[in-house]
Length: 103
Image 1 (cartoon, rainbow, N blue to C red):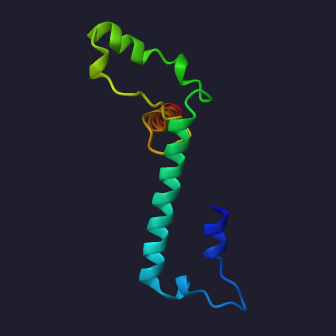
Image 2: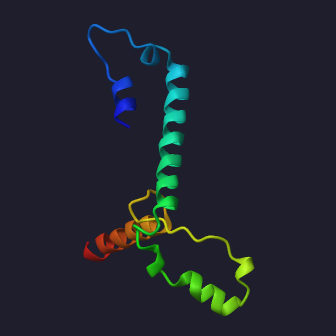
Image 3: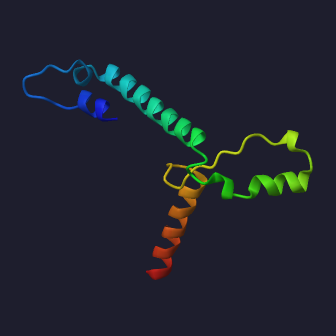
């Protein structure tokens, strides 16, 4: 991410092609965002043990209720720090309700 921030920085004595070409800048930023998001998701998927995903019992409950483990895919827990994850949205909704209740 620091590399991309460096590439988008305005400098006095340096010509930056990305900043001068508007459409190129848009393509670069979209590609950059997609790459960063896919790397974040890959990290979350590969580091489930570090994120203590085994403590979540939803997968075990689904297997117990359904009885067929073949119908259930691999469960990946998205942390609340991941933007737009259900837990992230739920935290924002709870914060909003707190503000509404207070005022």
